[in-house]
Length: 395
Ligand code: SF4
Image 1 (cartoon, rainbow, N blue to C red):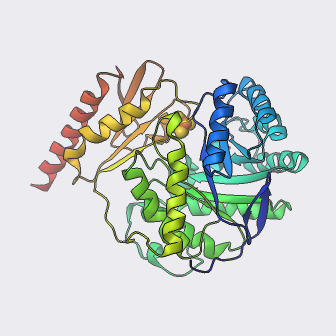
Image 2: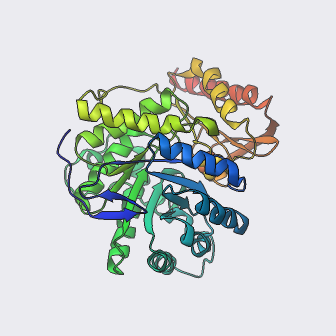
């Protein structure tokens, strides 16, 4: 395997990320957090499958109470991702080994408080309870002001600044957000953190993480392609990004996100192990492999999914839109109301799932709310109309 770089080493429960530690594979339980028995069984199974850290969704005080029970019943290393409600940190911290916060989510609640004050609070909680942090930047929830600032570069995928080798060239809102947060955490003396910078486009994941690794070489990186979708496409996307970066020695921990049922989450661990094996043997995917122009993305699902039909819906839609593979559109299917509305805003055809109905969108414009049995047909109709307009423009 290519010689790995040396970053800071951070402790996460009884595991380490960075430094001379082996690359840690992570995954997430998709069982309902309130179902303590099922979640403990899932966490233990995933840990036995090779996950060094298992994430659990906690959105409420009741979830935090369930987490406390789960903690008592498993010795696996646990992490929790905070959404907008960053104050839950003090409830979950006693029962986890790592907390992930998303800088893009810190702008929503307690708006009179600056993001710096919120991060100071999170770092204090992490320090008090002996847990690590992950600064988790995600393309679906980036600071809108940063999106605006980098609009031109985002529109021009072949821009010189993206291709430049100049490490001072920041070309992306995800990258700027990551640097802003690591610099702030360092300035307040909190260094027990890693960073993830995830996009649904593997090429962007490579470019942004490669540049970040040059700019902040001391910071351990958690690699992943967000909303990679169902296997085999989701595995292919992840291989393209992760095998490329790991072959360059970049990446200290990873998660392969796949849209699969809760009981199949070990597939994420298997895919992670196979990526590491490919890198060790040098049998990595050709980084110039082209994906179909039609970008089909879907979230990996988690405890927040309100209807178990989400995974089947994402798969059905993927098959039903194969006819459009040569068109440059994005189709996004998200499993819940927490991240679904925001993370479908940049999709030409976006679906986010509620308990009984699915919300269909075109960009940020709502089209309607439909039953699980009828929404695929509506989505395909919307896509066909976009293709018709696109073809007409080319004439
Ligand atoms: S979109 Fe919702 S259901 Fe899907 S992974 Fe994200 S939080 Fe979980």
